[in-house]
Amino acid sequence: MSEHTPNRSAPSTMHGVVLTGHGGLEKLEYQTDLPIPIPAANEVLIKVGASAVNNTDINTRIGWYSKKVTGDTDSGAADGFSEVNDNDAGWAGTPLNFPRIQGADCCGEIIAVGPDVDPNRIGERVLVRSMQQFPDDTGFNCITFGSERDGGFSQYTTTRADEAFTVNSTLTDAELASFPCAYSTAENMVDRANVQAGDTVLITGASGGVGSAAVQLVKRRHANVIAVCGEDKRAQMQALGADRVINRGDSLLDTVGNDAVDVVIDLVAGPQWPELQDILRRGGRYAVAGAIAGPMVELDVRTLYLKDLSFLGCTYQPRHVFENLIGYIERGEIQPLVSGEYPLREIATAQQEFMAKRFIGKLVLIPG
Image (cartoon, rainbow, N blue to C red; front, top):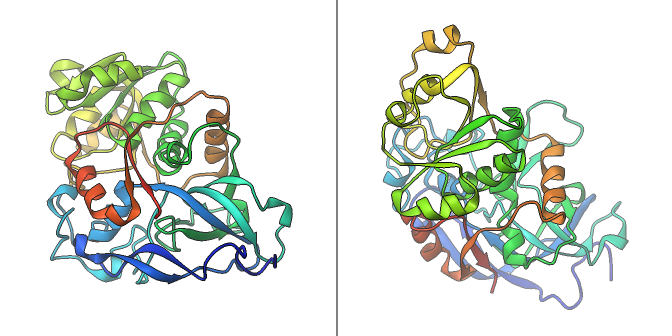
C-alpha cells in the first residue's frame, strides 16, 4: 500500500453528509459519491467508525456564531436564522468554506498515511482531537475539526497525524466517539477553573453532552457538584454522581444562596445569567463554553470586581487537555453516555432529537 493512497480495500468514493451553507436541516445533504480524501504530508487517512452530534455542529450550520444573531440556539436550530451574516458566521468570526463535511467527533482506524508519517501507525485505533492547534503556534489560534477542515460525518476522513491520538480501550467505536468534543470541552473548563478537591461546582445544562461530561470530570477531582437540569432528569443526574440537583428555571439565589459556590461551569447563559455571579463566593471562578439559552446577558461590573471574580472564556484547549482525556478513558475513570445511535444518513432525525433534549449524554452517528 502506498503511503499516498487509501487502503486498496477501500472504494474510490464514500458516503458522507455535506453542509452546503448556513441554514436549516435542508442544508445537510447525504451524498454517496464523495471522493475519498488523500492524506497530505504529516496527515493520516482514517476509516470512521463513529461520530456524534454536538452543539457546535448545529451552531455552525445555522450560523448562530454570527454577531447578527442574538437569540437562543433552539429558535433557529431547525430552520436557521434569517439575520445571519455569512462573513462572521463561523465560530472563529470568519467565513466558512462550503461545501463542508462537519463532525467534530471521530473514532476510527488509521488505514493510510501521508508522507513523513510512520507507516507503522496504520491499524491504530484513534480519537481525533476536536479543537486542534496550528503547528508551532503557542498562542490561542486553533481550528475545529469539522469546521475549518472536513470532519467525521463521512466514511473516511483525514487529519494531521499528531491530532490522531491512539486509544487502547474495550469500548465500542460509538462509545469512544461520544468523548472527544464534549469531554474535552468540559475538561478544558474544569482545568482552566482549577477545580480542586472539596470545591463546590455548579454546572448549568448538566444533562447535555458537555454538562454530563463535566459532572463526571468534576467528581473525578473529588469536588462537589450542583447540577442544573430539567426535573425529569434528576434521578439520572444523581446516578451520575451529582451531589445536588436543581430544576432548570428555579431561582439559584433561592435554592443555592449568595456566595455559595467556588466555581460555575456555564453552558447556558440566557436570562438567568446574572444569578451566576451572585452565587459565586469571593474569589470564585466562572468558566463558560456555551450560551444555548442566549448569548446576550446583563452583567453588573461591580459584582465582578468587588467580589474579585475570575471570568474564563474557554475555547482554545492546550494539548494536555486531550492527553488527560485519553488517559481517563484508558484507565476507566470516566464513562461514555450514549443515549442513541443513528445511521449517518439519518443525521437530520438525530439533530432533531438532539434539539428536543429528551436525553442525557450523546447521540452517535454510524457511517453507512
